[in-house]
Image 1 (cartoon, rainbow, N blue to C red):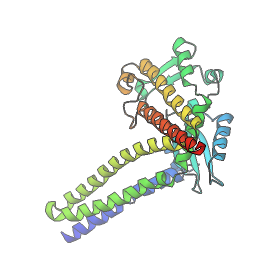
Image 2: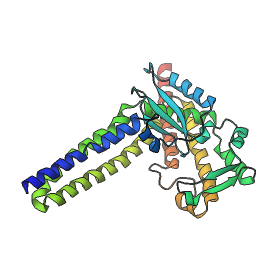
Image 3: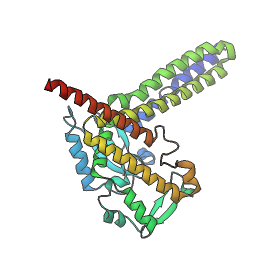
Image 4: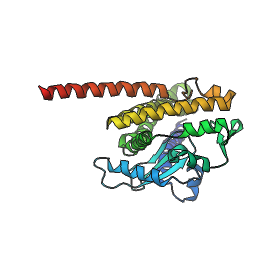
Amino acid sequence: MTSRFGRLKQIYMGFIPIYPLGYVILHGFRGDQIWAKPYLDRSSMEPSGHLKDLVEQEIDKMEKLKKAKFQVVLTDEMEPKVYGALFLSSGAELQFPLRMTLDDVETARRIGANLEVDLGLSKHRRKVEVNSETGDELIARLMLSDAAKHFIVQRQLQIANSGEYFCAPILAWLGLSTMGYGVLNATAMIVGPYLATATAVVFTVAAFSEFSRRFESFKITQADQDTISRGDEYTIGAIDYLESTMKLNRLYRKVLGEEGERKIARNGDLVDDLVKHSTRIKEIRKLRKQIKEKQSIHSEELDD
């Protein structure tokens, strides 16, 4: 019993570093390494010069950022992503959706003769002819204003420059897996070493999954707030981006038929999103009102 329990505890201890190692590899090794190719998930298209210049402009606006290494790439996903961090020696990879590199309608039309639309399942993919009424409408809704692009870029830079966002998942995993080790020891004498080990693993994974969901919701909301607090131009861009995305989603819902109706709500919110676009818009407008009220009070105090 004692020797078996000791081996099981060693197995559980060996289970703990799996996530941190995977996290570091995923975020730190994003170059030409052979093992990195399966998870890079980049679009084959190159970002436009305008998008790269826009990132440089937003980098220059960030305080206390002397030098940062970063890479701008495109993703076929609908939402932008950040890998790594600006404060790491390996830098950050900023992934932006394809629509961020569309500078005008003609550029969009030159991408190809057809656009393929899907929500992650290839069997539900639909081809949309560019030279059609639906194609014209889709291209129009894919376009983003400069204000929206500035918001997206600055928001992703805020995420890329946050040690809290980068380190929290690792610290949470280590804390929860340590608690799981306590569960293992506490339940071993009651249910036996094998069931206790399984219980500890399930506890750790389930607790971390719930943390990840809650933390991602927090990060989405907080990143919006951090960005729009930098100026009203970002608030305008945020609302423009979210509203235009909801309009685009409503068209996707129509084009994709049954799968679109299952994945997208009538108002354009994605059903599986942790924080709905409509909720983000509401919170942004609420914060904008609060900021303006504070500015008004401050202005009145200066006048007095």
